[in-house]
Image 1: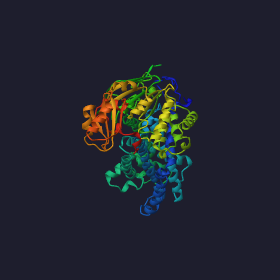
Image 2 (image 1 turned 180 degrees about the vertical axis):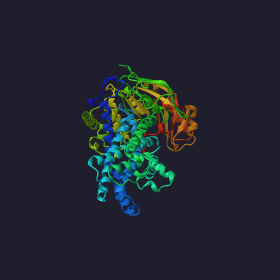
Image 3 (image 1 turned 90 degrees about the vertical axis):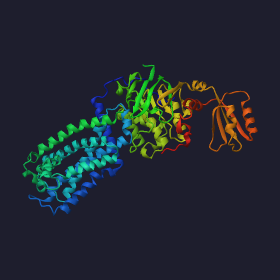
Image 4 (image 1 turned 135 degrees about the vertical axis):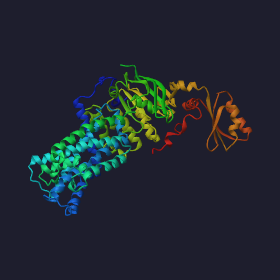
Length: 284
Length: 326
């Protein structure tokens, strides 16, 4: 008999019926987040959503539409950059859905389920890893923006606050897409659902164009869209053109408060829902 | 410490219309190897899924290391190692990263998880491939890595679900070697298999499952003794279409004929002069006998006797070496 395979005596781990302390939860979450980051390092094409896409979209919008859309108070580049940030980060949350659906599809979750781990680490770890890639995405958008002429006169704190607001919203939204991933039959259907929901969410907003020219009902939807609140908040904090400031809807008058409220509300609803989906999906 | 480490009592489980388990009971004392033997779809995997906290039974009780799996699933998970039928590994991580991750998630600190991973990679002859991505591993390597993953925290109870299904003969031998290392180490092992020789070679006790029910339970020797008849196999020098009819009166039950019509097999009551009588009967019918063999029952015979002609399906008759993993 090789010592390497000798079992420990039964019960030696302690028959602890309540099992996970805070330290263990944190360790499990870090392990899971690291796993997801290793995936990205293995398949860097996964990163194209948060690296190449933002560069392409920024160049596209600034040079293609820049001349055609007049902005009353300032340059189109300054107007569009906060919108592009919101657009890119909103659509990047599709990665959470696809990643979780892939894990379920490929049976890796089966392995996690027989381990004595803190199970929510599967979800929390992924959401944190995705938040890190979102930070990278924000950086790429900002650098590309600076390269094509985006400028801000705001102080460093206001600039950071703007990014933090958008990232907080993205983090909350990734729990919604986690629900999508956990209830999808396959990674492909998770991806298509993401497209169907996330693109309208990002585009029916003030991110790309001022909402003033939209038909009445669409304009109401856009003005109350959380993406509009987040975009308007960033524009306000960064002293970039914010045509929505003249709109009477409450979120447009108080974009910072509105985006915080939206993000908190979405997180409060979606996170428990995601863990319920996770439990349901892993019960038989 | 519980003397019975694995205990299934009247397990019932349905998936939709399909009844996977219809009241299955078995148990394994500490340090023993229990073989759960049955064809595809017999319910073996369902029983393992219930015992490893992955599935909830519709009725019945399951205990592992003395702990009820429904009442204390988290505590049960601290006592078990599981190697599932489809190796559940992260294809994008290396072998080493997989083992370290499983170790960390099982409660080991990163340092000891790494050390333990290195030790097991060495033992399972995966050290050379340790830093390669698992996606590129062969079926046998994956299976060994999965086994290694199940052993990381030295669990006292191990579940191996069809550990050699789909492996080529060489890989199968290596997995057997690893399992033999485990046997006698004090671990309690539940092994499911479609292969009788595997259960015969590795298990102390065999529970035969078919259509969600236990149809036999005993040591390999007991099961063989239960089938009193011997087995005769005749090889003809040339095809003899009527050979089966000729020997039918001399043997018990159905005569099986190979596809080329050259080999006949049947259960017989072992009696003196039987071989002579068979050869003579075939000779009189104008057929030349190349070889004739009367042998004591193998577990295969027992299995066929227990499950009936329609019982075992394709999986049990195939040679494991012929199977290619899709």
